[in-house]
Image 1 (spheres, rainbow, N blue to C red):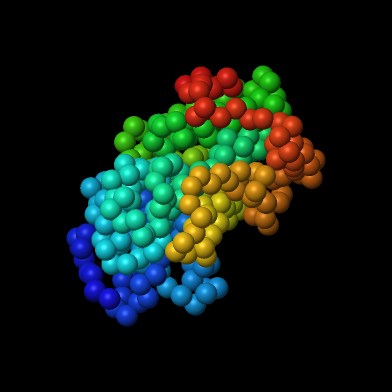
Image 2 (cartoon, rainbow, N blue to C red):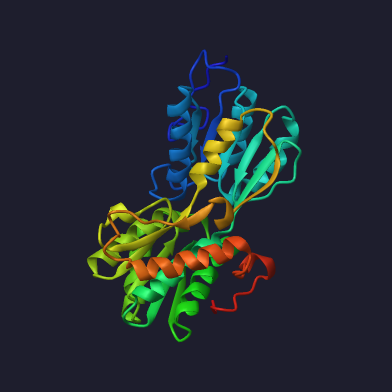
Length: 331
């Protein structure tokens, strides 16, 4: 096995070793770092669960810039890593360029579809999970105003916002829903200061429950919400523990399960399009000791009933990405 070190510069860290099996999997984290308490960390947790259960190891890298995407994919593929898992829609273009050059390597991309015979594309019904936490937000709100803070303004994040607004209005048709995005570049995923500023602005407009879908930026949102004594809603990973008694719930996006399954399936896995929603445990909401006092049995029963209807197909939540429209919210 070829030893590779520092191929992406001193700022990037690679977990590579000599003597590793050729089929050792690799995980590439998106910008924002693997310990972002959100999307990347969910992926890390899935990889760690696989490693602990199997006793095997995997390679990893935390990207420091957009320019490293294609380079990281090619270097891992050339080193024999298989499968190569990447977190985030922004890998789409790079993977489209790379996959065909390594037909014997399996690639897994989360949050984007790349139509290549050696690629598994995993996407989530984020609008469904967001609908559930929107219901909880409306049930918990005393002011009649709830809010959403997104990271980068892209259709995927509008999908979160629209599901949230639809769920809130299902509980209270007259509720006011405020929505703001952090920015229009990838820097929006890791700007907790801007997240804090947006939270304060929304509080000044009456919001008493704020839902953040903004990666590392959300750390600032949840912190400020706790400091200002309003409720927040986490995303991707279970973030309830960050501010016990202040985080109403977290919209779970089981990126951990997607990564764990990819590494478990290994080389030769089934490729193609993989959708994870409420029906197959791909999205949901978090209940634990940290938010038990905030969610009454009646609130939980109402949300669980909606989840069952979504899973069965009886209730359909609008998906912003199907038509670039949001009936429940104006941007």
